[in-house]
Length: 179
Ligand code: SF4
Image (tube, rainbow, N blue to C red; front, side, top):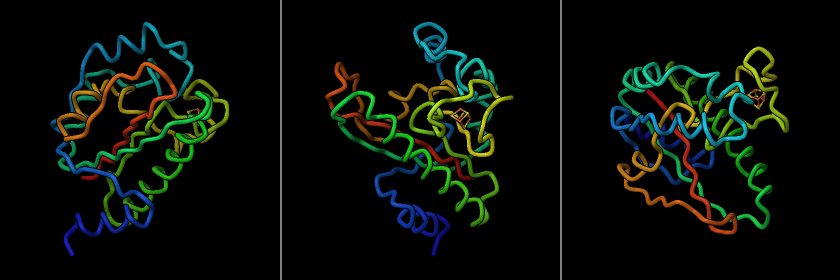
C-alpha cells in the first residue's frame, strides 16, 4: 500500500471522503486576504489563531513551501439559521484535529491541519494566545494564514463562489499539510 493509500484509509476511518491532493507550492497567498482580516472583520484580534496573533504573510508563505504534499478537504451544508453554522464547523474542526493526530502517529511528523473557519473549539474564544484554553489543538484557518482560498480551491478543481445569503449552501475547505 502506498503512503497516500495508507493516509486515504485514515481519512475514510475519520469520515473524510471529499478531498483532493495538491502541492502546497500551489497555495495562493495574497495581501488582500490579510487586509480583509484587518479591515472588515469584527473579530480582528479576538482569536489566538487569527491576525494579528499569527505569523506574517512571508512566514506563512515559507511554511507552505516546507511541504511537498497536502490535502484539501471539502464540506458543504446549508443551515436553517446563520448561527447554526458554528456548531457544524466546530464539529468538523474537532474531527480535523483528531485526524492530524492520527496522521502524526502514522509517522508524518510535520502533519498540521488548517480549520474550515477561525478556531471555535471553545464556545467562547479566550482571545489571545496567552489565554488560549486548548493551545495544543487550536489551529488557524487557511484565510488567517493569508491563503486566497478562492484561487487555491479553484486550482484544485473545486467550485467556490461568493454567497449572498446564509440560506445558500456553504462550501467550506480545510487543509492537511502532510510532508
Ligand atoms: S482553542 Fe479555544 S481559546 Fe484557543 S483559539 Fe480556539 S476557540 Fe480560542
